[in-house]
Length: 136
Image 1 (tube, rainbow, N blue to C red):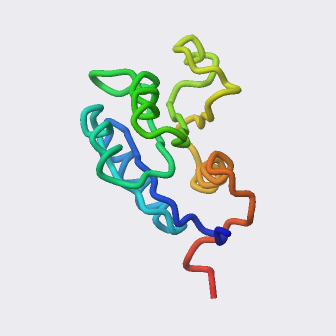
Image 2: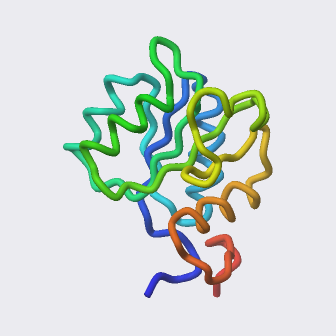
């Protein structure tokens, strides 16, 4: 059984290094192991190189489409949990082919607790959340 914090490995995919670094710092605080990539080619290589529990991917990736990339990644790593993120709201991106019932989505900017809660939901863990620093 999983503890209150995420021991899972999260592959973060975004073009913006500031966003990658922010998310890395924030989810590390909750015990996740983040791996940062900024391109589609790097993303697909990670399917063979690491044990990935969650793919947290921006929908707008330069040079490719995050939705297409996530679907390609899922072929290489069946059963991978996927959480899409975007600065655009859901109605603006729904036409890109992501059925809301099939994939999870979080809109940027987001609060850390909202992101971690959504990640826990996607990973199928329903126990409580607590930052590592507050555990005794």
